[in-house]
Amino acid sequence: MNSKSYGRVFAMKFAGVYPLYVHKAERKNRTKEEVDQIICWLTGYSQTGLQEQIEEEHDFATFFAQAPAIHPNSSLIKGVVCGVRVEEIEDPLMQQIRHLDKLIDELARGKAMEKILRQ
Image (cartoon, rainbow, N blue to C red; front, side, top):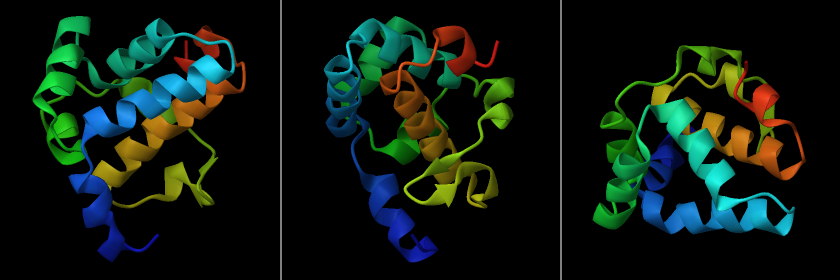
């Protein structure tokens, strides 16, 4: 994906993608609560704050801009999402989005929560 197409991703509504994250997890016998735990860990949102973001239908750019605190261990997230190494993504917002995608992928693949949350 080139930087020109990033704008479309940044403008996507988080509330539109969130159910896809939950569905992906539930198909692999994981839970919505685990998805929420991952999102809250990465972004610093409380459960209430996360719910407000979903209800307000913010785009990804706003969702991450308003995040209370990106977890310092997010720099430990490595690997490939959509054919791109997340640690090599130069745009900070796109990297945060791909970090979230990578964590949800790890959940769906059955990885233990302690490892997903880099503990």
